[in-house]
Image (cartoon, rainbow, N blue to C red; front, top):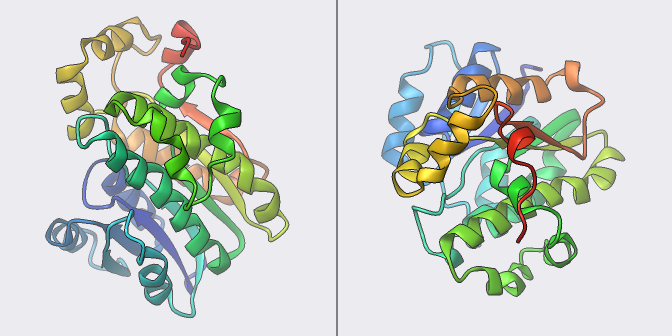
Length: 266
């Protein structure tokens, strides 16, 4: 990482975002950490190694003023990597709110940051194994709504939090594909990363409501949940020069769960 560039990590106060932030701090990256919870974000940042260059931005990913807040925080610097971990699971909100954070917010974030990306930079968007279980049947419908002012057209899928989560994360996966060509012409890569079940508070809350998740883990080749650090390693790799020919695709990090279950019907 160049010392005059920054790495932006969202959802950095806990869970996957915190694991990614620790991993990137270990590489000496200058960090701009974003989370909706200001106190938790500051507390996490204070726990990073003392020689870490770190700034905090307390912001709601779904807020309409996010692009302006992000641009002001970046200033005249360039962004080596944007690793977007922030999101809501189906236990955390209703369908409309899940779409607002997971998809509309993601679209706004990418639109806001892409003009600041450094040559050779990378954007990693966290999707989900759920996007793969949904399958490709709705891709044409989702793809035409991947604009911040058009996501509302997917409201028919917001009737339940579970449906909203799966469709919103499929949208994130498709967004990476859709943006790859234009960003590639600017020397920037974009990838989605789809974790399976990660051992975080969010996933444990999901498992309390969905016993099928435990069955899925037991049936998977790995036979366990992922550690957050394992997924963070993949995100760090994708942002490195070692992944310089990877773009416009999704990286599935699920312990082999999808290889066993395959695509579900909608």
